[in-house]
Length: 297
Length: 285
Image (spheres, one colour):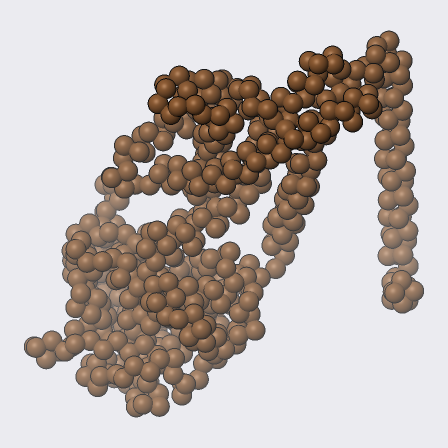
């Protein structure tokens, strides 16, 4: 697996953003700081004049309906730099719709979404350029079946970020090496297991050095054996400081790995806090009811 | 190898293998037998039909074959030239038509309506009628001066096959799962890049067999330009027939058309078989 000491990316981090991230994770394993262990994807938000830095992602009263079906009924929360936020909720609560709105694969019905200070829901902004700043990993991997692993991983870097092919391939091989898949670089997606495909998909999302990584139920299509290898990779990314928003049904993983839990029930945020606050100590009857299904798992 | 295997194979498996070999042998013999029987029946039927000597003389005459071969050969070269040209243009026009039909851009709205009408109507017109309409209608306008019937015939073929092929391509584009588009767009690719790098390559793979069928159809239909007066293989054969009242030149034309299309038909069969095999094996990985 990846080693913490090796860097995927060498952009210098700003100290303020690290400090902001760490206030949220008191009592948890600290993200190693310092040049030798710089985060994989240090989003360096510009500090706002007020003092607190701008969060990487900020949702402001986001609403979305399909026809008369209101899916999101005013959702507001933030993801700060280097934070891992788990979005929980039953099927149909709006998690996937929310993820699609953030990745600009759906347009919001109302409200605003800010990515490091850019209002990405503003119709005047270049949506392709905003999408390029966010890494997305899907439940069904969605690798391109007609391209081999290397081409899948390098496509965005070459075509969107204009990286020279040789450099993109070197970087991609380096990433694949870390997850032990360098030997599979010329294999096609249908020759890989689901877990391998999903890990390649994560590499593909990382190639563009995204400011935010969206993981949309990335283990839901995998059998329990393969879930572990994918979650280990997520843990690794988190430890390197990647800013992650993940929709998931893996309760124990969310409890252990997330800095914050956002519980979405019926299109509204029912709870937003640390895993302990939301999953263990919540007095909210709806939240208690939801988590009662997972006791003892 | 077989001997080495023998030691590790259980008696039950050996018995099974023996049984399978016997079955395979039996089915080979059966198919050889039925083929021979059918061939014998055909030959007998031909020989015993009262008109056979006459048919053999008028359709399969050696001297006439050799005599008309050079002229028909000249004709098929024209057919092949037309085919090359059509095969170069049709993919481009068909892709454009298909992309216009699936586009959602407001600028293209009038074109979308036009292409829809165009593909819907043209696919209903028999090829030969379309040839007459373009071949005799366009010169009638008197705008373009004298155009050779070969050019007009080529245009008619392009128009007709563009509509068929564009529908095949459109089906292919729409058959690519929306999640592929989503994942390409999520990377930041523009919609044009998504089309070019992700949708079209996958769509072509899906519809390759149907496209190859279209191409084989086109290979034969280039012979229809003869109705406009272009001296292609069919026309050349017709001229020979008219001079001699012997139909062997048509056999010559058929043989040449078959020779021209055979490599592609064989390649097509091989390719579809390969695709099928890969699809079947994909499930085991």
